[in-house]
Image (tube, rainbow, N blue to C red; front, side):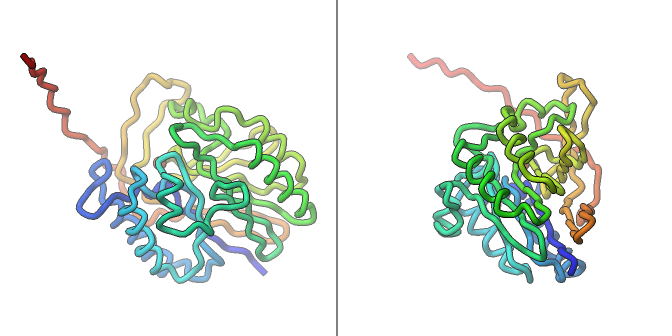
Length: 274
Ligand SMILES: [Fe+2]
């Protein structure tokens, strides 16, 4: 009985006719769905880990809904800092809100408990879990002491030695303390950074995936060096779980390291009003 599920993140969908950072993000999601159909139709489900819409527009969520309808497996969702929770719930339905009021969810499957946490907070780019969510997380973990657990959320709690460390989950102590109440947290998986990474921090395993949008170049511990935005990869994570082993593989459904060069902004013309 092997668990297999997919994580997609940072889809950054926009309304029809628009691009995001020069990229056709809907076409990229279509490519992800094609990859699932070609290679991962046997997965138990797919998690969308936030930044689903680039600017939280209803038209972008409608587009998301119609594209993921092609997936041959169930879809579970949580949100990121680019999302708009009320608009998302309007389009997808109020049932997506958990008992915490945020888009949290627990999935029990093949001997594992998977916990989705909504780390988005209106008006903030960094991640936040409210006290009610921490209590809920502790309760979900307490119910599953006999099983391995995987936690998925948009924001990375661990610093990665890169410029975007200042927009991670900046106050992770309560989150870490809650995770530490469980003896078998197999993975904490996030998107947000548009970069693939694995880490061990405070005795816990953390992973980020590059996701569906652009990815970024980085310089270790040189936050002032500007990043280059790259066209690829379009990447999903493929999580494989057995009783003794949990593995995260990465499927780059779009290759490419071309640099995105944005057109220079036209200088603003000051108009004097008499
Ligand atoms: Fe993102």
